[in-house]
Length: 500
Ligand code: TXE
Image: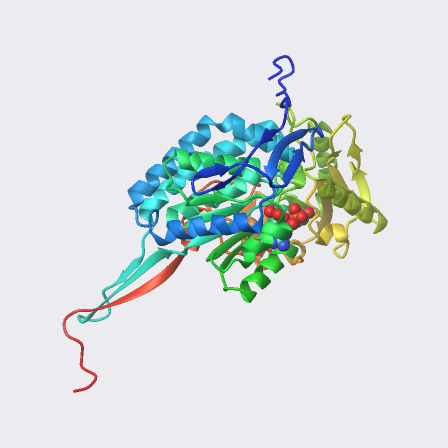
């Protein structure tokens, strides 16, 4: 730490990671290496193996064996809970290291990374309780001769494919719940942000998770990812990423073993602001909703659906907020918006900004690449005069770009909010409870915020309507997602004979 500036220093040399199978780290050896540069500084920070499909087979075999011999699912809830609780404690102990690598590889501000890591420890602590309270159902209304049970059984080996925008958080929205259910795991993080997934695997072993229950393979989506979604010995796959790859996941499951799927895909989420909202509060929330994680967030509020009577004044408030937000070096504690994570994403965002201008939207502020001497940064961007057919109104940009779409009535606000193929999240800002609830009921979205945005925790589930995905993560719903249901009919006494 450079104390004078409250800025963490860059590592002297990149840290090398192996991949993780059967409770042990396997060094890079003769494998090809993926070298990751920090998007905020363009210096090498990590070196990670490009696993082969043989490596993947080894990881799946380990997870399969660990599931089939019941070394984890056969433990009682108390024993599983103890491992999850210890994991939470170890994440807290190593939080600074985890946050540092999250920031180095992803480019998010260090203060944000620290908060996310604390939230991840909380996920494990909460899920420990769920490991003990997961249960089925019973039916004693089937007559005196019959008793019925419904049990929840772990699905089996779960593959997890995660993206680069929240490498540790998205992982921890799944792993504790999957482990609480009794399943075993093969995780494949994004090739550009693998470090913290590998750290979690070590922590789980240290916390007492039996070998083979958490395995991590690293490498590209097109090789290792594709092999994982096609793998016949994987029973369920949780995928978070683009809608395009989500489609491949569905096709692969259909072509191979019909594995059960959980999908969290894109979003084009509305922020609905009524004239009777606390507009100061709403402006801050809307700026946060698109600035957080540089807008590289599946739940970013990228469409500002605002009542026309206050639209201009509200746009001015957002502009003032954007002018004051601290963009810059992610290692600096004061930074609020960091770097764009990949070169490809940087190009995508800039091309949407150009498309917005070309399609006739009015660039109110931002829209530029910011120059800090190194790394890639984009200023928070606000577009007015946006109409519903424009690309910036319809497509997920995954960057700090906000499109204003005014409305005149509640019905029109609901119509604009629902005019999307996605349905991941929505926020509504109003002091009128009737309006807030009417909008909440009628807008199609898996997560809703009233007079706030992007809040969350382990209790409430997450996931999307429509093309934003299938299934739910977190909370008890998140554990149940990784179970399958077995019905048990128990005859009491003697059966009525079939053949007299
Ligand atoms: O995602 P990909 P990318 C959206 C966002 C972004 C766009 C592209 O709009 O601009 O997707 O991002 C793995 N078989 N979201 O290209 O490719 C890959 O290695 C199996 C929204 O990074 O979907 C990585 O681990 N796996 C989203 C993961 O899939 C494959 C978060 C995601 O990468 C694969 C991220 C294949 N054939 C991007 N190809 C959200 N909803 O949060 C790639 N992968």
